[in-house]
Length: 345
Image (tube, rainbow, N blue to C red):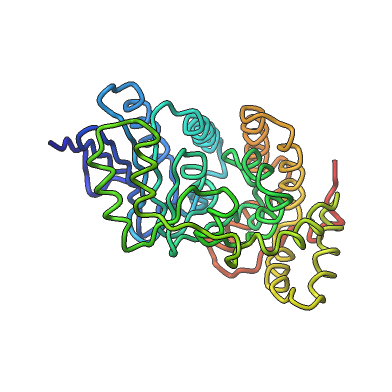
């Protein structure tokens, strides 16, 4: 018998169905962006279920056409005059660590957009299921922020220099791309996702092999010869292994003139539009993350995020939010405006 804690207007819905608990991010009109209330509720439910012997499995999903488009940037913009951001950021990073180290088996059903902090609720899970409608990206550097929520730990552990590529270019990955590179575990056609969810809800087991076997009944293998981002990895590695941002951009642009590399030009355009300060901070953070533990990465990310939101380092983050989320003129005025003018210190 289902025990439900549902308020249709609440930003997070929680259900307890038999031995399975379900979290649904419930801001579909806002693409389930993560507000302070979302962080509070998700943390509360996860903590409760981790201690509950009756809960064997936890399912994460999002309402509407997105899992989550990441952090609520408008929330930070509205609180820029005070230290409102301190508690929100601290709680979010604690939540990220809790998700990485969670003691119960968790499954994310990732149908639609999954970006930034939203992906921090799916990628670390033992099981992360994506579909043909899933779109992943890391847009933080584009608006003057940096890849946080544990991604300075996750991205450097992808194949080659793919992590640098994804975080600097805001390149999009499909569901099959995500499985191919290790950002998701299974690809399931969208028309089978509800049936998979129903099968998971009927389980009375926390055994990972049992959960895996159920998912594999519905999943489709992603074959190495398919057209995934891995086919471009040789070029990506050649360019994004460079030491500095300026060298990366120069090398990437040069590669674009080679036959078969036409895909580079639209990616390069996005890279050149991003905040130079955000890009340089992000690159350094990802490089440092290669040799840091998860706690070390989260502590570093917390310091970086707070200094950016407090405008200690730069005011680009608020200019980026203004240009892309508030006024939507898509014409940010970065300061400094070019990578060469940004200090490497």
